[in-house]
Length: 328
Ligand code: GLU
Image (cartoon, rainbow, N blue to C red; front, side):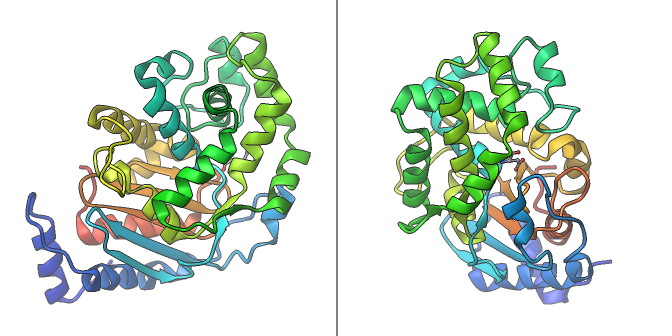
């Protein structure tokens, strides 16, 4: 049972009143420290992904969490400034760029339903005639990369520029070792891409799409960077500089898609425990959105059998239990 001092409880409750604007990064910091203490026993639990060898070299006992409020306050605990491999967190950002350009049209090439099979499964794709279930599984992300390539000529470069800009970190880079490790073993992703090409839902050469996809997954970012870059999802589509990336309605739909499909084939379980739109990556990161309040990024590399960070899910569970800040 999570116990918090009465004073903190009163402040948190005040935060929970809709429309009330109290902000203090000290309070955010205190909340994250409580969360960290609560879930400390599970840090290090789980296993590392063997199918991308470079990812298996990380210390499973690493842990970091960052919170960025919609008004720009930043708090963090543990290794929240240490870059990790974002992997599938990149799918949210790349899809946002395509959605910003294409609007509703992109939903004809990729769905918004949950998937019941693994994130790299070919089963759904065959049954759905080359239309991926959602943009947050690998097939959907390959369509996203394909479209971003058609739009810009350099999908991964465009994404990296966007991320640098949004988190104010010009030093973000692709981890070349991870990118190579990923591409060398990309047999399933190649199968997905070829299947979609056969159904007419991939327009660029498979090898080019795979190369850009592998590099976007291999971008290294800290929890702080990710939480900052995702802030537009909590701000109804408005970017750090006040301009708009997405209409509020598209932001709502993307957040809804994250809620039902962002946590692999355990999205239901995570919605039940956490109650926030979130996206998981096999690098151990999870980005979560509290609409109109804040974004969170938690990183801890030990994964459960579905690919979600064990300590990461526990931390988000503790966070929403402590604060009451879920969408429900
Ligand atoms: N690069 C990984 C893959 O393609 C991403 C998987 C993930 O993080 O969900 O399998």
